Amino acid sequence: MISGAASADCGLLVVAATTGEFEAGFARGDGSNSGGGSTSSSGGVMCGQTREHIVLSRGLGVTQFVVAVNKLDAADPAWSEERFEHIRQRVLDFLKENGFKQFKERKITFVPVSGLTGVNVVSKEEEGGGRAGKEVEEEGGWKALRRWYKGPTLVEALDGLMPAKREFEKPLRTIVTDVSSEGKNVTVRGRVVQGFVRAGDGIVVLPVGDDANVVHVERGKATKEGATPYSYASSSAPSSGNAKNASKEKEVEDIPELQNCALAGDIVELSLSGIDPARLSPGCVLSHPHPSLRPPVRRKFEARILVMEHLAVPIIRGSQVLLHMHSIDVPAVLNKLISSERRSGGGGGDAHGNKPRKNPRVLSGGVTATVEITLSERLVIEESNECKALGRFVLRRGGDTIAVGLIDKVLS
Image (cartoon, rainbow, N blue to C red):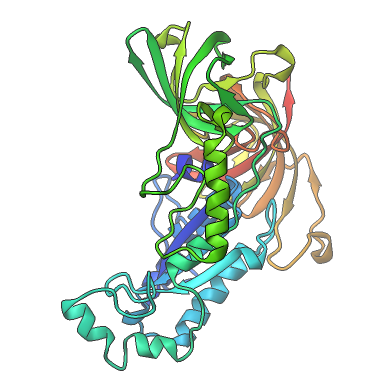
């Protein structure tokens, strides 16, 4: 979940509409909801997984959501508009709560679906045969949904997601997720998070600092015939506008300079020479070799963290945690609590009298705070406004997620 959300631009959140199931997944963890929460390893009651996954995704950089309200055909009554609106409003309010950055409502799409019968997944009508096909033709099937729902299907909602802005002009940052050795060369797989890389380029592998040469670049293969690494595979015949975009994508693919090149956002395989395979591991960062264009490798930084709503044990100075960042995790210590401010569900803290507290003794659930963190080893880290992928992290303790954070300042 953490490594996937860290490399994602958009999220698909599936929530169950059946009575009790949604309430359990959306429980606050304080026993106030009928579903309650599960018991954590440290003896406290955790909040529902739906809430935790939303906070994790938001903290790790997901800016767009498609929320699939599943099992609405099993609600009471089936395909209830009232039940759909109840779930929509609760999830929407939570998504829009104060945090690092509020979600914009236009970037959140809610879609009622039935995974069992296939209603409103690809088509608004039935997609299955046999029992499913008979059920959906009844009055309680897709006809009941069409009475009040005029929005997109799940596939249409996914196709309507806006492409993320890519930072091609910034220095190269590629996060390694897998390493294998092939003959005299080493093959690494990963994601180009900013910049670009071409065959023949020299790079530096951090944090070890070894130099290497890029021999070959292979981008992620398209999964559908006729699709390119820069296009979305469409499930329907292209319209005139789509045909125009397809011609542009074809022009991009025909540029010789891009045949052995990967840009920001690409999943790539790079064949490297001039480096020992033992010096590479998942979590390494491939960077531009010039010293002024390399990211810092440090053990200490200042960050803003968003503490999860319910904590079994509050966070205090000296708390030991496990820091997760993209595909790695390292032990860390919160050695200074600089300030804290309680989040408000409706607006800014000052409007509700929640002024920032300097040098707090503890951090309880539901607060935002500025802290200083020291890692057990040196990592490649950057301020979040310089490189989002290297400036976002998750803190866990005892198997529970306790906070998500953004790096504000890298300390020497």
